[in-house]
Structures are given as structure tokens and as C-alpha cells.
Image 1 (cartoon, one colour):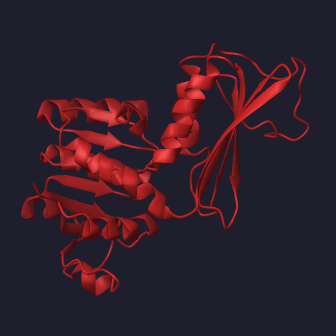
Image 2: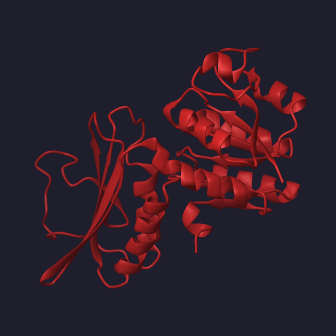
Amino acid sequence: MTTRIILAGPRGRMGLEALNLIADTEHFELVAALDRTNKGKYIDEVVPTSSLHAPIYTDIDECLAEVEADVLVDLTTPEIGRVHTKKALEHGVRAVVGTTGFSEADLTELRTLAEDKGIGCIIAPNFAIGAILMMKFSQMAAKYFEDVEIIELHHDQKLDAPSGTGVKTAELISEVRESKKQGHPDEKETIPGARGADYDGIRLHSVRLPGLVAHQEVLFGGFGQSLTIRHDSYNRASFMSGVKVSVDTVMKLDTLVYGLENIIE
């Protein structure tokens, strides 16, 4: 059965990879794209490397009113993603969202909307399957290692810090680990921020450098030993396996799921 997709953000680095994914997946069909510009044009006009011939809209209400779609895939920004997700669900279109920055209030509102409509929604801080496994393994390890710090490394154009993956990892660890202030009890920062962000006693450190894509290591320390769990994405094609799984899975859901770790067994 064909899954009809609207793609938001087709000219971005993730969007370009998503175009390749849709073109290479037999049961996916791009029926429209949402872009800031290029209204009335077609994808293969704006992205010469793509063979997909789908109309481009700049207004989501117009797009959803004119196009029959099953899933909106949004790979834009938190501000735009929140608006697009709500609009899609209101129109009865499922959503797969790859942006971070959703608050608990946002998630509650969108979950209620999805359940009222009886359709699925997946919001994922990270679509890389390896990154999801890294988070799950970290949660397992935290049952045995209570001292842990997270270092997440991304390209220097990333807007949020810590990353959504870093925060999600800390959330998962805190579910199985009692709150603990780590380090010396009289520890002092001689330069503010030297010890990183504090999430329930877990320290998160953000690195932003050109040349990086998306990387994270979770460091556990114990008496006489340490454990490091690390994941590296060297290009954005690494995220597409998770996008594909999400699009296929969201068609079977009737609620909102936050994080791919909840749909990967």
C-alpha cells in the first residue's frame, strides 16, 4: 500500500536525504512539499538532483486543503515544526517530526489531539538507529553505574544546546538512577559553566565545531573501571533508516510517541 507523504523542509540537509529516501522506497510517494519559497514550482525544478515531481507550497493550510496525504514528515525547526505538527493532526494527517524543542505542554497538547483524531504522531530527537541503541544501552548501564556524564558533539550551525538526544539520554538514565550530585561536595566552577549543564545531577557537555555532524558519548565511572558508550553519525544518510521506520510505524498508531526508543524493541 502506498504511503502519500508531504515533506516539510525539502531543501535542507536532512530534507535532501529524505527526498532520496522517498525516491528509493517503493511504497513511498511524495505528493507535496512545504518550503519557505518556491510556491507553485515543483521539487525537480528546485532540486535538480531529484526525480520527484511534486508541487511546492509555502502555506501549510493551503497544502493540507488541496493535497490528499497520509503522513507529514517535518525536518525543519522547532518553531515551524510545532505549527506544522498541530496543523497536520487537525487535518487528520499523521506526522513524523525530526525537530527538538517540544515542551511537555506541547507534547501533551499534541498527544491529546492525536488521540482525539485516532491517528499517530512520532516526534524523534534523533532518527539514527545507532543513537537510539546508544540511549537504550546507557539506560541499562545506569542501573549499575550511578556516576555518569554526557558529552554531545555537533556541527557549529546547530541552534540548541544541549541537543535533544543529550537531554533524552539524561531523561532515560534518570528514570532508573536516583538523583545524585556528582563530584566533590565542595566543587566550585572557577569559570561559570565549566561543569556543563545539570540534569538531575547528570552533567551534560555540548561541543560545537565545524566538521562534526552528530556524535555523543556517555561516560560511566565506577571503582576501578569506566564504561563509555558512543555513537557517531558521519553523514545525514544515517538518519534515514529511522525516518523510514517512523513513517511505516506511524500508520499503525493512534497516539503520539516521543522518541524512537519506544518503537524499537
